[in-house]
Length: 481
Ligand code: HEM
Image (cartoon, protein in one colour):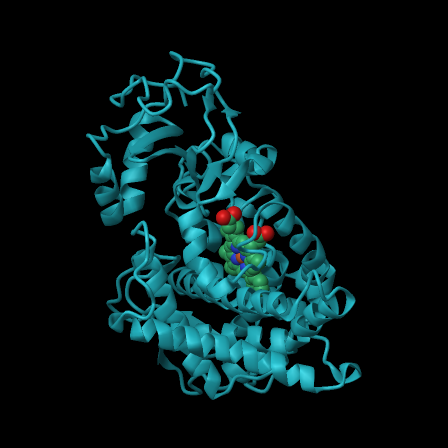
């Protein structure tokens, strides 16, 4: 953590004349240590685009937990010290906005939802939405999640065999979110939506690396245009269909909760705002959960002993019945397997980069307004100082007897006021789904299969689509319900 000699220029030509406060350590106007940037620093970008986490790891080893990257025109600071990361996200929350370019790319789909908004607009949205996503409120969704899971698992091979589990779990989580949002079961639109989400994610991932996007009417952007239209159409259709119904017939789902906000205050919550939140819940609500469940399935398959322990816990908790909300606290070990999966394979491996809107003090440094902060959660989750043998799957790390780690060292859902709005929903959903999978199936690694390599493409996904062997458990009925 100590500042070391830096090969970057200690005196910044862009900020030396500014009125920013001097750093608490080092010469006035100096920056933390970091790799040699050259004239523009774009060589660092090239290196990062090839192997982001490999480079970040090497720089952390060489320069410490606060690393300066001079990538013209930005000053980027990579922070991997848990306490400083929490300080940024909690204490300095009001002095930070998310990386504007990234947010502009996301806004094409999310509009001005809580995920995109900043400042007072964000605060008002977050405050209004919070109750619908509280721990208590999401308990009401347990039967819905169980019903969707029951239907999906009934379609898994009855005689066992190799299953493309990642796509099976993506269909399942999409079904779950469609039911929770619109009270609608999976149908043909889900297939189209799955493809559309893949297309827009790939387009977004490509656009992040460019300072501006070519307009969407360009001929080569036809697939992206079609995908955007498909997703907008899906949300728009559900919204219009609900508005045709008398409101006393509205089901208790997320759309109804959002439309109540519109009914109470149509100015603060116009229909466009309802549409934007639907889109964010739809996108944020299934992709991350699907990716986590895929990694969890891999971890279970690769660790039969952990799987056996979790199976026994599920059996004791509710036998062959579908889990009810009251059963979920009876599954602490299963919860640990999900927590450890999120440590090893955080589906949001890099939080949205933050930019300071005013000078801030952090650790030994004072940073001027306009500084960018990169928060690589994956790097922190794999830090041997907090997680010995960091690449090993050890659910016991989260058990009652485990050694404590610093609070900011584990951030699968972020931290501070902008912590994931859907974390209770996600954890509840994943607990129900994982319990029901283990109730019915044994997961194992197909002979000769190598461990999947994680690849960062907005979320953390296996480089190759994941397949696993599934075998139905003797005695557990596919009709358990
Ligand atoms: C395993 C599942 C999930 C993971 C790992 C995850 C992770 C995250 C993370 C890390 C953030 C903060 C990003 C940052 O600070 O830059 C975030 C924000 C958010 N997530 Fe999730 N998420 C998950 C599921 C969900 C679900 C199910 C929903 C809703 C249905 C959801 C809705 C949101 C929203 C709306 C935000 C923005 C909150 C704000 O800015 O105030 N997420 N999520």
